[in-house]
Length: 468
Image 1 (spheres, one colour):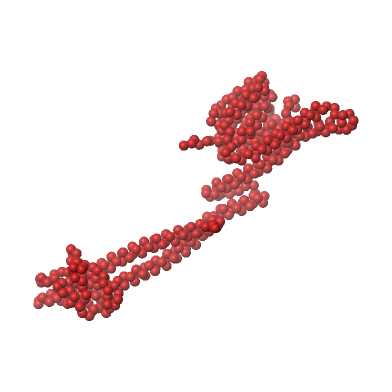
Image 2 (cartoon, helix red, strand yellow):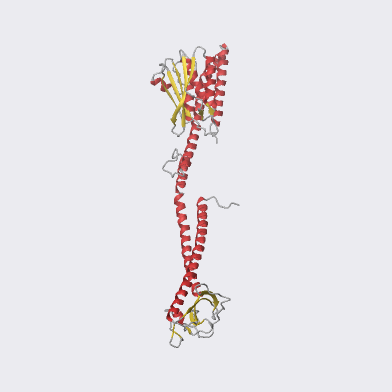
């Protein structure tokens, strides 16, 4: 059973809601505790202020009797059973008040002994007790000498803690209502924020639907930086899919073009056989059939290689491939000088080894057919591609007759042979172009430094991160 449904909106709202509830709960507990402590301190300060008022309002008459009528400015000291009262008595007999507030009757007051509740160094003590109304009362007592008498006087001031608890309760209630409103508002705000925040994903979904319906070629528009990499990867996937489809159509066209001539020759030989003359040249039929088989096998291999190209782990060190190709070319064309320039030690092609061999092999074979004395293969690093990938540049130069600009453009077209006197199908350079474009690179033909042809191909370079 899934903890969360698949909806991102629901997940974000629930997570935000849970966090908001926990944050409000913890904050509420902290604020309540702080308010309770502050209220207790204020309550004690109020009692102490009242005690000082009482002590300042009493005196002794000429007979040494305690006198005074303290006015504390609080009507609760005048209300019976309010739990707020004050009294003045001798410390030797504190249970019998001599002066007292109107809120008590003046009957004996239960006062703990100093052994049970000792006074501090300031001759004060505070404690709680039960009032006759059943409520909890906070008491503050202080001892002092009044007048010139050596009799110690004890002042008592009491306050009803139910008033304090009522204040704390009202604060908690108000805080709960405020936090409840804030929590509900926060959840609603989170819902709106999440909906607005996820709107680019909805737009990406609509754009992707447009691509699927043929209304657009890729996802376009300005997306947030968090979604932009995903959009780029989707566009890359769409581009790769288009490349695969284009490649399939190109391969079918190449194969059809390659088989057209051998089939025409075989059909002509077959017609001559039907006319009763027999096959005039069986060896020609055999050669053409072998060529057809070779072409079919070549394109089957191309299809297999293309199916593997999407692998993220495809990597090919360049140096061994270059050295192997040059060894083969030196054996096939011993009258030519093949040289390797540039440093390919750290060069790594981000692709299949067969593709690199086919690209460079086609260019080297083409150069060797037209070169007079030399062919040079060089490799270097050449910036980045339109897919923002680092590129390797492979240049194959010869000292042959070369091509003019119009001929260079035609040479990259499928099946175009500019020199019919040389063997070949006219597919080599077009295959090189197809492979480079599939990897996000390109092919450029120009004049070499010796006046011949220079073919430069750009292929992705894999920058390997050194292991820790």
